Length: 270
Image 1 (cartoon, rainbow, N blue to C red):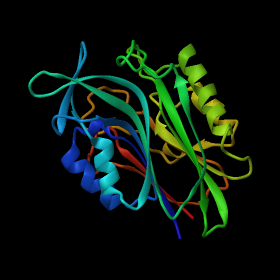
Image 2: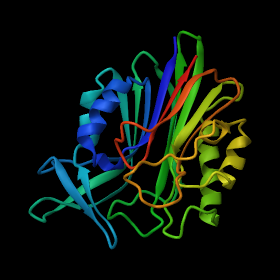
Image 3: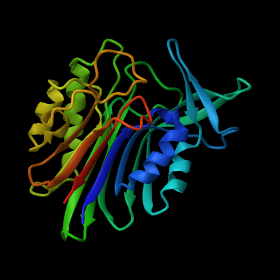
Image 4: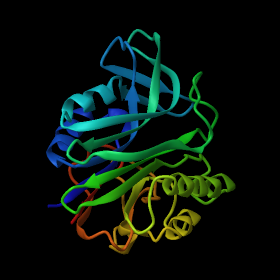
């Protein structure tokens, strides 16, 4: 038996018609999704996000749609902020934005942690840049192996100045490690993933190496985790790390289909 873990920045569901069939077909046991939207009493299926330099369509009830798509999974929504989106009549709609984790019900969650790696929850708007970011960690039990497995994911802060290391990113890395340590037991298998928003040489990987983790994206020669929907030259953002006791059966940075501006990372472990 293998366990499939998929990590993806879902881009607010902008490519919804391609994204949902792909996630269904991927049939992962654990989905680690970043940039997921949840809107209470949304007036329509689509809303619009606007700021000084971007206008993006957002799938208003993306989390609920994912829950319906994956009825055999337990779903966890982890918001970072509640801010304003706009409907087709330019009415303001309050919406939440953050991480979502889905775990197949045959893999019981026996421990978890959710906390912020940068900033705090913002209930009254998206907040000043760099905006708050969080991480979610689940410790699940693998009946086939008769052993736990911990899976953690993070959406790293976005800095308009670029993906280089900053003091904020150093603190973010330390906070991520602390959250992982609160759930993971040394000597057990550990998988860490997400849209880190950093470059391969970041101190983030030094901090994670202290847990025995190594990155599969760079170790296996992948040089691009973005799709054609992303036009900037720096092509690294997403990573998947494992401890040496994780038996990697297959790992891929999925080039096709393109279901967001990030590529999905798909891991199969024994």
